[in-house]
Structure formats: C-alpha cells, structure tokens
Amino acid sequence: MESPSLPPLQGLRLLVAEDNEITLCVLQEILEGEGARVTGVGDGEQALAALDTDDDYQLLLTDLRMPVLDGLALARRCRERLPGVPVVGLTVARLPETCAQATEAGMAELLEKPPDIDALVAAVLRHARWPGDAD
Image (cartoon, rainbow, N blue to C red):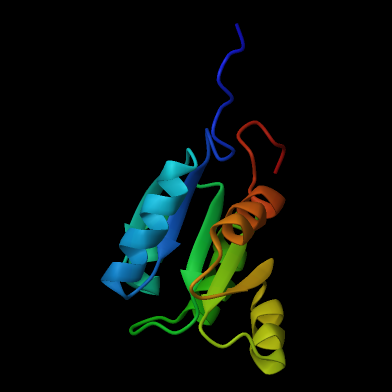
C-alpha cells in the first residue's frame, strides 16, 4: 500500500502581511491547505513585531501597498534585521518599475495578485529557508 504524500509546504512557517482581510484569509487558506503553518498580519509594522517576537519564519510574504509600513519598507527592514528570511512580494500591478523596486528592496520575487495557487506554492518552494538549512 502506498503512503500518502505530504503536502508540498509541510513543515514551513510563513508570515503573511496583507492589509485586505479577505485576501489575507484566502492566502492563509491556500498556504495552510498546502501544509504550511501561517501567521497573518495586517500591515508591515505588525509583521516586524511578529518577527521581533519570533524569528523562526522560513519566508515572509507581503503585499507591496499597505498602510502604516508598506511591503517595500518592510522588506528593507527585514533584510537588515533578519537577512536569512526570504521576502516574496505581492502586487496588483507587476510592472517593470515595480519589479525593480521590489528587487532593490531585497525581495526574492514579486508575484501578481491574485496569485495563481501553483505559482504561489512554486515561489514559496523556490525561496523558503527550510528547517535545518544553514543560514
């Protein structure tokens, strides 16, 4: 008898920063359905507070445009404080200048919203720092 395969994101802890509650819920549902443990927050300052409290996240997924502290500023601060935590951005308009801003801020990748489930999972698999990986 064949054993069932594990979900692709099994074992990952992800932090998701998204100011739209519906989008945050959808992202959490998708990522948890793929096996990840997800903490969701509503803005960049809440994400920094979560990272200050617990730096054991394997990836930060953030919206670019949020109140209080946007995703670009969050990515810059995350790179300074926790350079081992990869950051993947989300935006409704993935234009060349937006991609350049995301790269400059230190993001590993920029996805367009709403993300295709397969593209989202693939991006997490490409960039996540897996438990046990050396920093």
